[in-house]
Amino acid sequence: MTTLTVDTMTAGYGDVTVLTGVSFSVGAPGITAVIGSNGAGKTTLLRAISGLIRPASGSVTLNGQNLAGLAPDGFVAAGIAHVPEGRRLFAGMTVEDNLMMGAFSRRVPAAELQRDLDAIYAIFPRLGERRKQDAVSMSGGEQQMCAIGRGLMAKPKVMLIDELSLGLAPVAVDVLVAALRTVAADGLGLLVVEQDVAVAFDLASSIVVLDRGRVTRTGSSAEIAADPAVRAAYLGEA
Image (cartoon, rainbow, N blue to C red; front, top):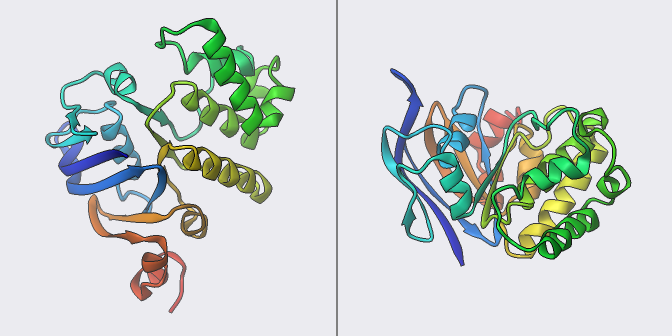
């Protein structure tokens, strides 16, 4: 079983500390969701886990390998892929070319890459239909499919997804949730930042609650969803 462990991590930007003493773990296969209000530090957390920023202290380990000090490509090589908020597809490139960029650092036979690409099209048939279309001309939901597919093409052990459902129609969210359940069942670990708490509870088996840069609760989705304080804070219940 793959395990991603964040241990007493403190991180931020320059003199500004955003995360303080953050600790939790993500197992694979499985889906963990991070919930929290705006400004809680969710995006900073994913950026620190994927090597885009360097923590001031603490550690990120994958299967016991300490990733401290690695450049972002080292995190990818170790098995961590990051799907950023806003999708950030390459304009002027086709859907297929965007997907293939996820495999840029892999040194494997072309036939293996084609099998992986075909697997993405099986998960997201709409991408197969639009493989020769400019990726950024698609709908928001289709672009998110492409961004996730690009991450999957890196063949990660753990994939981080920032704001899965932001700005998307409910029908598109349903497609994405079903797809993520499929890839998790196939052995992938997923750490998903999700602003829609109802979606997070439905998608994930475990939840991390982040509040003002600190982890305040972790537990199963059922446990966290039943917590009156969580329901009051994030679902507006009295």
